Every structure is written in C-alpha cells, then in structure tokens.
Length: 231
Image 1 (cartoon, helix red, strand yellow):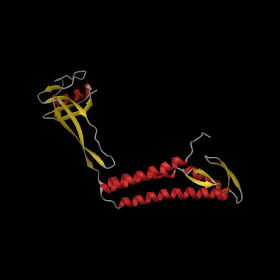
Image 2 (cartoon, helix red, strand yellow):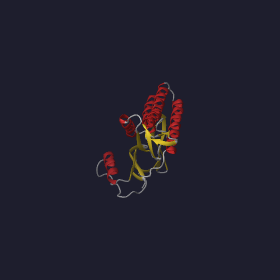
Image 3 (spheres, rainbow, N blue to C red):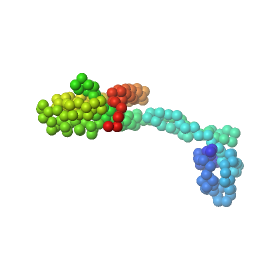
Image 4 (cartoon, rainbow, N blue to C red):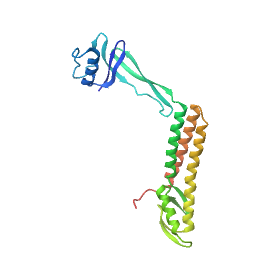
C-alpha cells in the first residue's frame, strides 16, 4: 500500500506521509476547502488533482540512514517530480554532552552484563565456572559464612560436583570478586575518559573500544561456560 501526501500552494505539505485513509484525508481537505467541496475516493487512485492549488500525491518514503548514538535526523525533505514525491532525511551531529550521557548510561548497562557473565577458577586441578550474578555470588558468601575450618561442602559446579574446603570456597569468592571489580574499574576508567573528551571523532573512537572490550569479554565468558544440561 502506497503512502500519500496532501499538498497545497506550491508543494506545501499539509498531511502525510500516510497510507490511504479516506476519513483522515477527507478531514484535512475539508479543513482546507470547507466541508462538502470535494469527496475523497474510497480507494487509492494514485495522484489526484483536487484543485489548482491542492493535490493528493503518492510519496516514496526513505528512512533516515544514521548512527542514532551520534546523529539526529534532519527533515523530512520532499522533492516533487512527475506527480509523485520522495521524502528523504538529512543528518546532524548530536551535542557532545548528550552523546557522553548516552555512552555513560550504556557503559553502566554493559558493566552489569559483564559482571554477571561468570568467570572461572582452578579448584582441585579442575577449571570450574563461577556464577558471578548477584544471586550466585551471594550463595558463595552465605555458605562461606557458616563453614568451619577443616570442613568441606559438596558444591555442584556446572562442570562437576566437588567437595571443597572453606579455603577453596574462599578462593572462589576472591576470584569472582576480582573479576567483578575489574568490570567496575573498566566502567570507572571509561567514565573518566568520557569526561575529558570534547569532540565527536574521539567519542566514536572511545565507543569503538568500549564495544570491543565488551564483545571480547562476553565471548570469553561464553567459551568458559558449559552448556546448561537442565540439572
């Protein structure tokens, strides 16, 4: 289904783009010409010359091509030729402070993903996956709190069951904490860099580095985490 414009007075757009909606188009024309001056056809017919100064024009809509983090759309702009129109958009750079705010917000969200993405530790010569979600690491610290020195506890890691000591459980907690803190340090360093950047090319370079770090770290986590067997 085509889109249409209602155009008056030398290509002044009064309505649209819109799919063919007889009532919607009729209401616009009635406001321009008065009621019962012209009756809009029930079905679309392509270009319609309503009066010498009023037309219904089919329009090709072109979506703006932009990077929404760094650019805003400008327009729309219309070109008219052979009883048809084309709608297009330009772009303009967003204000630096707005880009900084959006990157900062995205980095905080990415850091949360990273801190919850799990890490590994070597326990009893076995590389095991450590749950670094906030709920998962709470399980480690809760059990550690009531364990006695010399006591062991059966722990179901994704890879296998291990009977681990309090010292080994402490190693799991320490390894997870260091991994999580690394992500917070990354966020802190990124925020500090953001605060000292005042031009868009540098912001784009920083954002590229952020995306690279995020993708690489998440990829490592995915490789070290075994598939869920449903148990």
